[in-house]
Image (cartoon, rainbow, N blue to C red; front, side, top):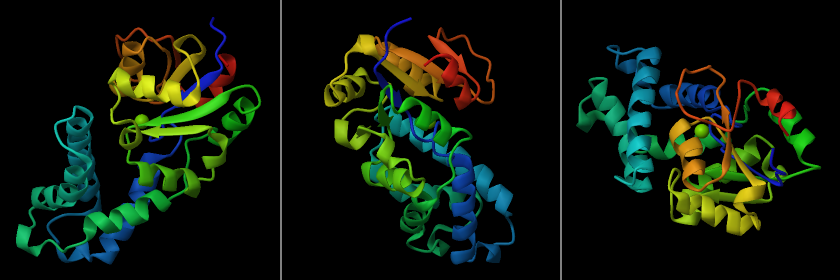
Amino acid sequence: MKNYKHLFFDLDHTLWDFDKNTSEAMEEIYKIFNFSKWSFFTFSDLMKIFYEVNNFLWDKFNNGLIDGLELRNNRFIMILKKLGVNENEIPKGIGEKYLEVAPAKHYVIPFTYEILDYLKPNYQLHILSNGFEDVQHRKLEASKIHHYFNTIVTSDSSGHRKPHKGIFEFAMKEAGATRDNTIMIGDNLETDIMGAQNASIDQIYFNPNRILHNSKVTFEVHSLQQLMNIL
Ligand SMILES: [Mg+2]
């Protein structure tokens, strides 16, 4: 095994509990904008379509087909139209409100604090995320993990998105790391794992749902706690 010095963590779904935080934020959005007046869909319909549209748009964003502004502006219009709301009935400001409420949520994936405390004395920790710069900083602060990280690189600050090797090369330069002393830890086989492979960096696939796959990863864990067996 290599002598790792620099650990690059993905943020959403790896440390910051995206599902729990999003669901709480969406409950607030549902109330603030009085979505219950549209009796033809339930909160659970809303969540289902939210994930469908959000994943669709993030896929497009990660592949460079749309920019961040398009993603932010169109998300809720697409979601509500899909649920059967007329476009002219969609209130203004839902996208902005969501971006105010969601990144202020603090839930993290189990063992986040324990593993960061365990790793911090022996490694330099970094964030490597495709998210937006302002939003990711607010999530790190809300969940009280900002101070663990030496550098924070996002698609905004690097000009590239995972799985493009450019963002990994930019992040290593920022961190003063080399491909031989770096390992990427993330939950997404395409952006995190394939991306790191594109940049010839070792990878730890965080796979809490034990998704079946054929990727050849350096290591795989099902809980953050298992990182202690590797690092
Ligand atoms: Mg992720």
